[in-house]
Every structure is written in C-alpha cells, then in structure tokens.
Image (cartoon, rainbow, N blue to C red; front, top):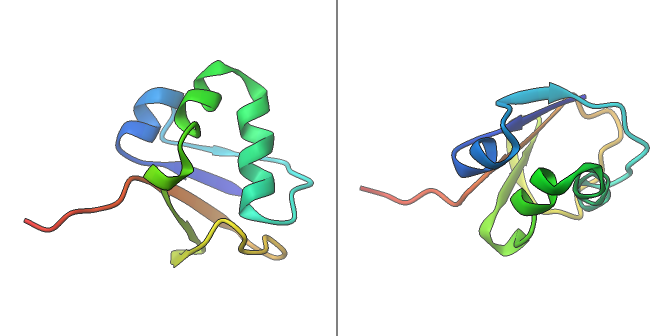
Length: 81
C-alpha cells in the first residue's frame, strides 16, 4: 500500500510517500511497524494525538482496518484561517 506523509510528518521522516509491504491489520498496527523501522519514524509517530489519518482518502481513526486499503495518509490536524 502507499503511505503518504504531510507537513511536519513528511519533514521528520524525510519522504513524501512510500510503498509499504505490511502485515498490519489496523492503522495502529501499521504505525507500530513504522515506528520500529528507525528513529525518524519513531519521532514522527511519537504523539498520535497530534496526528490525523486518512484511509483511501477518508478521515478515520487509528483502529481502522487495513484490509483492501490502497492508501494511508498521515498529517497534523488542519486549522481554519
């Protein structure tokens, strides 16, 4: 699946997107796999309360299932302006 990173998440990881092979069954499981990769991922996913997630372009929670998912995106909360 494709994993997309936006704003400071992208800055900490150093990539705008990547294709990931995963055994994760939920977004939270995917985050745990990514955190374990290396320090830059651990830093990006340190505080999940500061992140939002979308699965196939639908805003969702970290307990969302990944079966059949093509894309997961991580980004900070957006503010109006």
